[in-house]
Image (cartoon, rainbow, N blue to C red; front, side):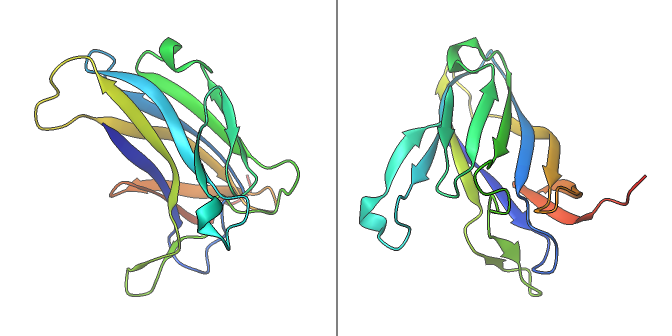
Length: 162
């Protein structure tokens, strides 16, 4: 069983997310985390060169962001895991270029990575996985307001300074 962690801006004018931290929660009684995976494209213009990579204990996205996790070993995750995505070589690169248009249509690619689980028992009609404790920053290292809506992490406006 799997699902994608997806990120999109509320609209095109909102700042993009350049760094991200999030927690993933799931029922350890029902599920065991297999790993998280991304498609790495060394040359995004040529999709035939793309391949799937595991991101735990650490890995990289096509955007150049490194993905670190705590715990780093999927077998040690017991219902929750924290991920940090950062790009030290290009801190201005966005985690995702996706945004919602004025008509509410999704523009761009929102998928950050795929979370895969192995069933420990019959999950019946499905399984629960949730995302929480999301912290995001802009290309200027400013804090961005975040909401989790309809399966998406949605970045909104910059948070006001204290």
